[in-house]
Image 1 (cartoon, protein in one colour):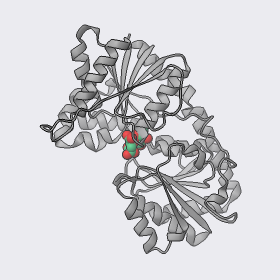
Image 2 (cartoon, rainbow, N blue to C red):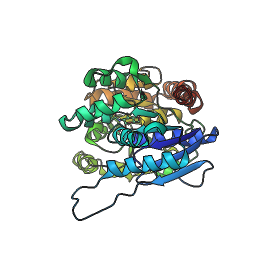
Image 3 (tube, rainbow, N blue to C red):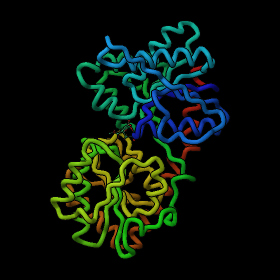
Image 4 (cartoon, rainbow, N blue to C red):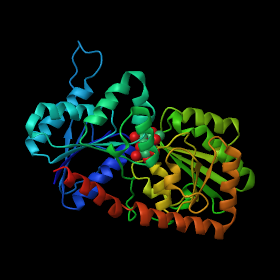
Length: 372
Ligand code: GMT
């Protein structure tokens, strides 16, 4: 099939999932056309059957704001017509589902079906803003198929947007377990820590919803129990607040801020513990990627995370905000090698058996086929 995929190209879960989906589908023989305003961050190098169509946003003195949604609609329209797309699959409702709806209206009878995948903040934060609420609902309802990355997100969408539950199919996020795998040799641990120190890691876009200051608090608690260093991967608005908190707690020397990284799988493998303190997380792709690398997760019991991390089996979940409890859980795991190994292996097993690319991708393929 010829599949058009639209996503945000920037660092973030929805762009990562959309890109991995395209890469996986191309490997299975489909022709993939990415339509975005920049090359998605995980799409590097030449890959057979993958094409990229850049959305060009014209600037004109009369326009104070850019017309991204319209430029995207025009590019989806042109690409669908020129390439003969069989399906257009947009990731993140705003404004992608709306732009795709416009493109379909322009294509009239020749329009390929539209699949919209809801990822999280498009529903839980941005979509519920008064300005966007009705247009988000409209665009979801006008999609030929709608998927959500967790049961939690489906339920939120049904509740907040009055969408019939049977209109939304849950297809969880997935991970390439050949790429994200335990590989403690990938990056020498000594880059980040001495032999006797444990490595605690966090990966996110440092938006307020991630509560990155809590990561610092959790790490402070762990360090009271055992020698450890914290590696913070990613960047975003709250990075400075996190760095300030580390300084206030006298932890400056023990926390490394790495900034954005396109190949986290190279780094994750050397972590001993992954900490995720989001107050809401529709799925938590970063946690799944850590599990695939055999890194136990300590996280807040928020949103769809319990659908990914099984508390007490392959990770530990605590009440949001309970930093002391999270620190204690982390310390206990790190201090007991047998306990740690059980969690590490169980996380890898869950990633392989439930969320591996080859298990999840066929569900998207069946969906596309149903719509033909
Ligand atoms: O986490 C973010 O703020 C980025 C956001 C995105 O759309 O890029 O992530 C959302 O989609 C990811 C992929 O489906 C999910 O794993 C994240 O849980 C979700 N983020 C939130 O719900 C906060």
